[in-house]
Amino acid sequence: MTVGLLNDLTVGGFVKNSWWDKIDIMMWPLRYIGKFLILGGAFLVFLGLLLVFWQRIPFLGKLPGDIFVHKGNFQFFFPIMTCLIISILLTLIVNLIIQLFR
Image (cartoon, rainbow, N blue to C red; front, side, top):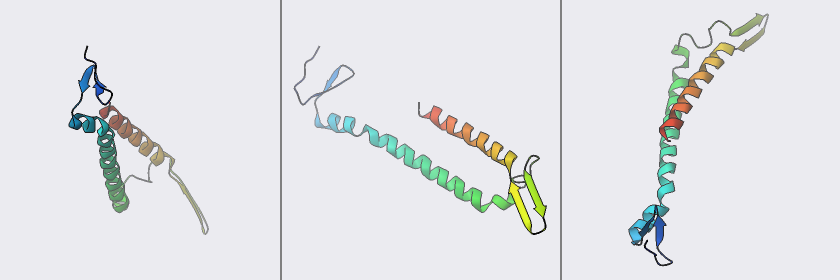
C-alpha cells in the first residue's frame, strides 16, 4: 500500500498527488449542479409551452370528474380529474429523472 504525503488525496485506494487530480476531485459537485440547471431549464421551457398552448389542449379542464358550478353571476371551477392526471404524469416524469441520476 502506498502511503502518501499529507497533501496527497487518496481516492479508491489510489494516491492522487498531481494538482490536476486534486482539482478534478474538488470539482465533482459542479457536474451535479450543471445537470440540475439543465433539468430546471428544460422544466421551465415545458411549463412555458404548457402555458402558451393550454387553451389548445382539448381535454384539460373538461374531463369527467371536473367540477363546474354556474349559478347566476357565480362560477366555481375545480378540475379534480385534470389535477389527478397531471399529478400522475409529473410523478412518473420525476421518478424517471431520479432513476437516470442513480
